[in-house]
Length: 226
Ligand code: ADP
Ligand code: 5GP
Image 1 (cartoon, helix red, strand yellow):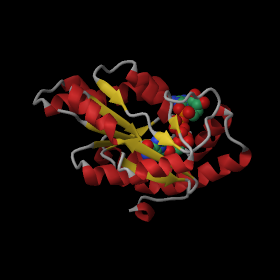
Image 2 (cartoon, rainbow, N blue to C red; image 1 turned 135 degrees about the vertical axis):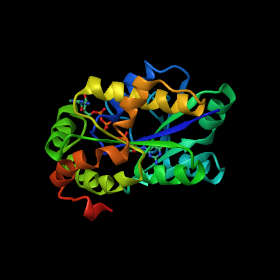
Image 3 (cartoon, rainbow, N blue to C red; image 1 turned 120 degrees about the vertical axis):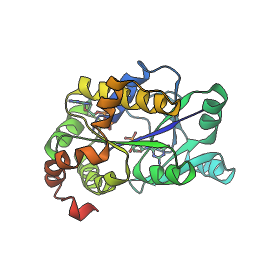
Image 4 (cartoon, helix red, strand yellow; image 1 turned 90 degrees about the vertical axis):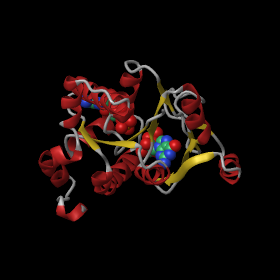
């Protein structure tokens, strides 16, 4: 049985770094490589980080029903998850990890109600800005746009089963690994007390208080994002 894991985060939170690390640690975890119409960045390669497509090719794939979900992210480019990754995971009996935005997560939750979703947050807005600048792949204008988008994206945190504040990287990698493994075990009617305790501490209902200063740094309060 395939468990579908969704991971979303404001750009620059460290989601790609986390995903890369756990993919190296968790066996039987298929990763969906998305399709996008955006240009490759830095040393990204076609078929490794994304399948890079022209707009008309992407629209042809939409018309042919090849996507499980797709969205226009930042109102600019298309991003989409091909159905074939889910089919492949199911055929292999692997779990599937989707790195998708908040709109895509809404769509997958509708299509796959028992999917497990994880929202990654930076420790605060200042740190998010620092990480976006440190990554050195975006212009000032794009960084400003991503910070504005982050404020809107975090309003969706309450729809996610788990919230992972990515402060110390190694701790976050262990937390993500524990979430994936404990959910997997649970579906097999098994448990590992150590893993399940770690995972539980990241469940939405157990982190609400810790989120307050993070939301405030983005000019939000829990009440304003309900
Ligand atoms: P995303 O995929 O969420 O856009 P990245 O994984 O590209 O983000 O990370 C953005 C930047 O932050 C990168 O330069 C990365 O090395 C750095 N980074 C990631 N996690 C941490 C962390 N826990 N502490 C400090 N820097 C981090
Ligand atoms: P980036 O351009 O920084 O790689 O990604 C921008 C955003 O697009 C991220 O939030 C990422 O999660 C999201 N994204 C990547 N692939 C997909 C996808 O297949 N579907 C959706 N809906 N979002 C995606």
